[in-house]
Image (tube, helix red, strand yellow):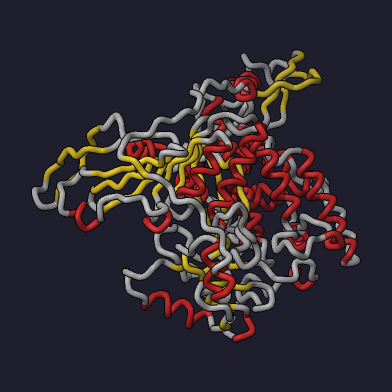
Length: 591
């Protein structure tokens, strides 16, 4: 990626020509910028030719000295300013002077000093699907398989076998083996080695019998190298994520199907790590992962991922409705939400997305929205100058409402001056919030408008999801450009399953680590290759039966004999795969 052919560009809104540069030069230039400049970020894009066979090739051995160096023809990076203007503004900058005169001038808004009078209906929706999930009392594996269901597993098996046949390899992957691979990937999130082959080493300091007994090392490597999610003969060349598009569609469908039906949602950016050359460089500031693929995400306020779409940048995706790219993605998320019914959802997002125009569009769709906003996107709302507001005491604010569409813009003075916009929440009731005063070294009470308070309470859904994913994310990665993205999807599915577990299981909740351990152990033990186990199957049964970790009693359709009292039972232990009565369950798992 250090060569000029690596596809690294600087994207400036005032320049119509892309300049090819070295990644090191880009990173150094961004780090040398003063803090007063607008924030910029590295954007990693998949290859331009999404249908090319070279995008499926590995770029080197994982254990090699430069094994993470992905060729320039596979990945492209772009430096783009975060606060780029709307599409119309960018087009006007690039158009000749004569064409600028033909631009449509929108009518100027009339701003009035009063509180907002929203006309949205109140939230009265119920969620029968969630009540049904609660009644089923699903185990962690059952919740995870709401997303990686039988249809998705069979789809991945078929596409992987198809791709192997195209390479003249008779892979013969089965659903059982794929679940073993998924179990190992999940396990790598909380047990990781410098080299993944160390799981199978016989050395006592690294050997992991749960992995080694589930699947042979060479078989895992072969399956992992051919893992595939689309037919190479039917790829959309205009879609840079065509290699994983069928998986994205399936996951979005399953995520939305089982999402909790709530009033409040967050929209924001998530980052999927890219482990390429100089992958330790992290830009922009403020993100836990700052170099990799950007993912547009819509979540509940607690962090359940409802909808996601990998960003392809303004260079590859044309915004619509006169919005910038971020605003267009918010509208797409709202459209996905409204497939479950045109309800008065309330969406929260930050200044990357907010504009008065976006608030107007969402209001017409019957959707509430609140978000911080940059001053140049307020459509000339005549608020007090920030310098003047800073001279006033903390907690001071000014606000105006657009007469025609009931959109409020408020400027509030706290530790800094904050602009916020909403089409649903106003100033009243004004509350009090505590802030630490550095000068007096004590807590002080300052006034806080209602829309600021609600925004602070509900906007953090994407951040909570990122935090959960970052704790135990999949560590095993391949060399294909989409390898890290697959790990991100698995982590997101586990996060969602755990969120449902917290809602459905009030009496027997487990934390995220225990939840992931349960899924990994069941997948590895229940789908292990028994054709050549011999005496080790007895060892597995003995060790797992008494480990007191992740045993869950579930219903079974066919009655079998209880492993303890030997009478007929219609329940079994999901981990041990043995029929056990509820009354015998505890005694069976104690030595």
